[in-house]
Length: 109
Image (tube, rainbow, N blue to C red; front, side, top):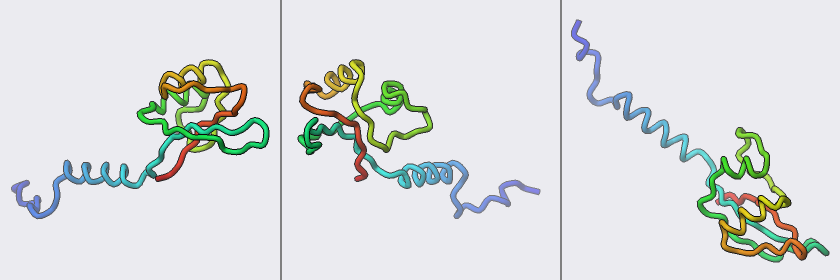
């Protein structure tokens, strides 16, 4: 039997199917934006927020001691000196931890 006989040229080949499958998986993931938000220590009012762009999720997971399976969609308090220093250098922004409480949060876009 000729194996070419079994191939229908009008159907996508396996490579294309895998490409479409990967694109579908990527498109089905929610688009999220990571944000640093800070609140008054007294009164808990939102004072400001700053978008966190180009952040490495794996690095954030290690920095906040989060397991690798967790996509970090929750709210995480910025507490350690290492976390503060990393965010300050990443955002080129000084955190005033005496006046405000800082959190890493996610917004779905």
